[in-house]
Length: 459
Image (cartoon, rainbow, N blue to C red; front, side):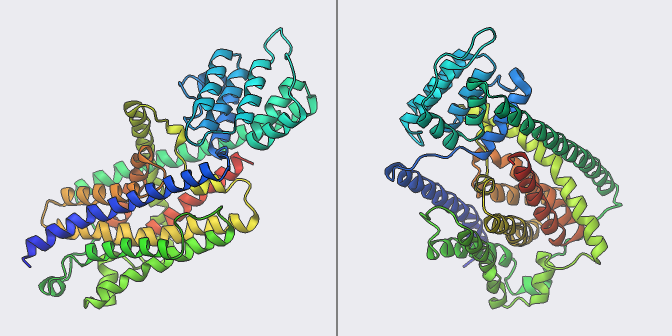
């Protein structure tokens, strides 16, 4: 087969296989939604929605200006109804409850909708006491299903000073957590922006050079120029196969065991690295072209990892802004709906479940994803464009690998720009150090920080 045809087919597969992954994930999500609808189970209130609602209560009107202030999920509409009622916006509150009642997918049970509607109608306004009360069964349902929002409603409608004090104390801790998160991300993000600008200037003046290595001539002469791309496809196919074999499609409620199983599956997918070895690539050459090596001593790794983490944050912030713009362009979507399944599972999880989720998100995923996306895929594009101007080759590799990386994640299209931004940050240190190790550490730290803050702000 001619070399150009093989290259063309490889690039086609590099697009089609991730597209198949995304299609399978959407099918899997649809199956779970259908199973939920036929199993008489009810949608859960997102922990992200709870955090956003609590923050909206802190900030007041300015946090509630959007048409759907807490997102477009039916349970988020119910939560928004209570938050809007708390600020005296009764008509908007009733409209949010009606949206939940009219939902055809992931709709809350009618008894819950009726109870929340009664709460909104009875919510006390300035100069007027609460009108009407809920039954004990209704209060139990609302507090079980709506969590913090149910507690807020009961404290307001029943005028319970003890319950109100507890709500106020929770809000103070949330405020402290928001300030801490803001200081952390703003400080690290500004440092990252300064670092990216500095690296750009130094690279333009030739004072910082790429540490990437070209494919060894001996491998190129044996027709192995495309082996990294081939291995990436092998990894995706193997991972999809493993998901099916271990029963990931249509799983029941997640458990600590299923989380550990997911982490083990993630590591097992690295068996795809056997492909280049079978093709005749030595382990030493494979490590060199994929960056599977230390970039120096431990202290240099620590410095590079810190740089990798900080340089990812300004790109992530830019991606968030693009995602919010996309939400307005696409219509019917809300950036508030964006969340990862792990973020949804973590609040309220058992100790064993929390440990498994942290391991899966902060160890297994970073090790495998950096090896695959920054080692194999980024390395493949760089090798295939090695003869281009260096800046163009680097840009192409960053954008292609970052887009594929972001697209296969389960957060949806609005999260793609932010995830791609994080990926670009990790690509910078991949290029600068020639190693994927700093990206692994930075990726794990980034995920760990997000999960820890999720626990703190939803505690």
